[in-house]
Image (cartoon, rainbow, N blue to C red; front, side, top):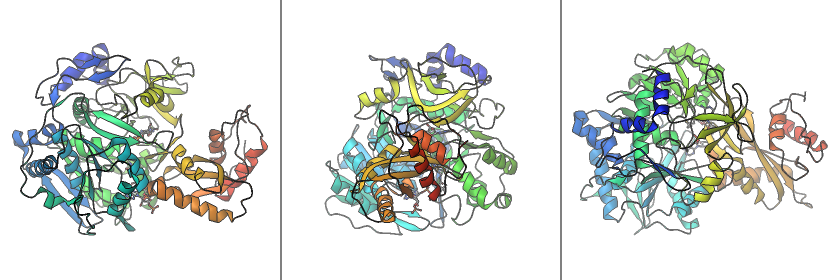
Length: 633
Ligand code: COA
Ligand code: AMP
């Protein structure tokens, strides 16, 4: 069956389609049906099935005779080490860690925060939670203590599993002091912490609260897999919304298993025994779905990469890892290719490594610009597949499903909707627009298995954020169009979320931090186009009357505050002091107009603008930062 037939088969009978996909999963009790519709309406998948994620990702492969196959390959150019862990070893390690967690009281439904760098132990911690039915929440290492504290208070974990440190090319990230500070700040206190001590830094443990990874497991009875209901939350992953309070996306267990397993074969063309690598971080959704769960559920080998696309030590490191591990499908963010292309425009480093097994490169996380795709196609000679998804969905909404059929690639488009997603482009009134016309991208409910049923502790926010604007639809927050051939084009966000180096960030969250500076009366943060990172945040500060301090000093303090409160990952480095912000007569800040000025795009002066002269001051401010170089049309 080709793509069209597969999509049509899903549309004709979604229930049969997903029940068939579910047969690839090992159930303790198989589900009696796929979709369960509750009031409101609340959609859940495979709710009456009983299943365990860790069993499906680890144990069943050992039972099937894959015990000696490498499950996780750790490639760490930062520490100059490479190490493989087989499925049999992984099973032992995870069962032991789970046994130790259980001995300290962690049970099904308890939350466990995981704050770890790119080491196999991060995946082992996730899987150990899954083994017990505990709900993990992984926090990205580039966030500051305050962000960790916010997550601790929201998901109230019984335990936190962390490493002593992370390693960035230019510095050691001291995780333990950040963790201690976060626990100090948070109102909720975890009962205990487990610390994986790395060679590069041995952290000081707090007696009675902290246990070392190895000591903690000494002599414990390994834990078996605990069956959970299909709709039991597998994990919570926080993502940026329009405010500083992140959204806790819930991933339901059974839908996650069924959907990810389906994508491994049908989208990435990966089966048991194949080798797959997603160069992302476990702190992001790509890391959850395609470093940890997807490849392991499929019985493939996955790579945990601790390094950067360039500088660790050279721009050929990705291709070396692909060669040495005979990677078949490779997944990265367009930003990573752009930084490599900048250092190696003629593909000299690419030619140094054999890519015999590489069949395709997948890109996601941000818009893939045609120039980058063409460059990669030229030097690799394999399909370069853009695909579009979100933390909320956990897997691709639109893709070119190589495992089913390779469709023609259209540059600038992540191709076509995957089965499960009825994607529509709507106008402001919620009516579908014609092919080729721009609008808000929405997905007809119900969303498919594996997608978020709601937000942790925030059912009303879930409805308000996603379901109210277009009744009967899920609002993606992205704008774009569908062409005559049914190909999607994702053009921009409709909210204040920006995408910096493939990282999703909230400008609203940054504004909340800036507004707390004692000299700042009002502020705005926008995402300006950046040739490498896609977008970069820029702040505008209006100072309180009577402030006479040096503006540069205030800007420096503001930059430091965002780094301190949100973290280095915010990449907030530029801000400018202005007298006023452009606003509508009703007081709404005209951020979209400011972005257009910064990017040198032509724009129509909003009819509702309060005082057009303010735009000149914004342009002048941006010019001092090196933006807005083109004159307005
Ligand atoms: N722990 C601690 N700090 C981190 C971190 C982590 N895991 N990841 C990034 N940071 C820090 C960086 O060190 C940097 O700090 P600095 O201001 O002191 O230099 C800051 O956060 C900004 O990081 P980033 O925006 O990633 O810039 P970079 O220059 O370090 O790297 C790229 C640029 C393009 C190489 C990198 O962003 C990248 O590989 N992006 C791909 C993203 C990705 O995989 N996204 C997932 C979707 S597929
Ligand atoms: P995240 O939840 O971090 O995965 O970010 C999701 C957002 O990133 C989407 O809503 C889009 O705005 C953007 N995004 C992800 N993949 C793509 C893509 N292939 N093309 C365009 N934008 C993308």
